[in-house]
Image 1 (tube, helix red, strand yellow):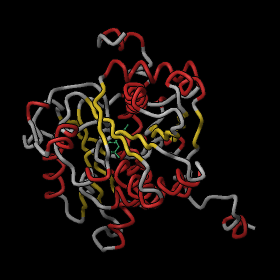
Image 2: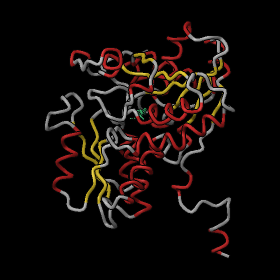
Image 3: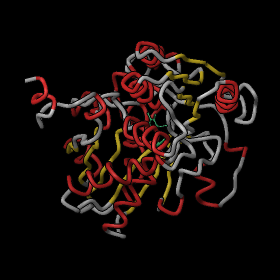
Length: 333
Ligand SMILES: Cc1ncc(COP(=O)(O)O)c(C=O)c1O
């Protein structure tokens, strides 16, 4: 009885089999307001409530397959929360130790979730340069060097990150839109989501236009436009997961047609609006994607079929963008 149930097509062998195949939902009110059809790819429907489940699984699988990750091993990663949650979930299922290095912008809810899944968490200052020994990149490297039988996942540079989206998110969007997608809009952090998905969609139809959403305070847009890494572009901001102070190799700039920067305020307000107008709770970076689409609305033809990546679930931001006191304190209301 037990064996047959375990192989039953409607039963998942573990939580990891629930990753991917997220819904694509038409945003009726938002579409009317911008003048073309916009569909939201709800990555918050993954078991870890973000797109990072896909990449965490792909990177761990790749490191097991190439012999770098062994039973009893330790997985180390820098994360703004979501990749950490996904890795902690995978480590719990596969029996690895998990050490996550994050920065002080992480919400308490995200931090509690990581701990609940059994991960050890190190918090580093966000307002230091990437090469500073206190930055989360440097701290993760040093923990890795000191921990035997450990791997440093490094999602900014691991090819398993865009690969996951090439093999799953891209085909899902193509199939869900019946090949009608004309514009693909995604936030850019590590670059995995935009690069992998864009590669797949452009292989199906080279006319699909890929738009990257970046944050004020990030170096990525200027680098995309000029090839210059300009340190003057770097300053603190509140958005999580969008923009960078380094150039990750997983941002494949040649697969991004244009990039646009958005601010904290309009991003937070779009996410709050979406909850009230469409009944969909999405995270801060999803608000950034919607703000970016609104900014570019004049440039896009009426017949456009826009797919917008909603990277994570809004329940991760109850203490932040969905909290009026926090919004007021940050001057965002
Ligand atoms: C909430 C959130 N949005 C957007 C992103 C950006 O996605 P990617 O890293 O695939 O560029 C991330 C990842 O860092 C994230 O955690």
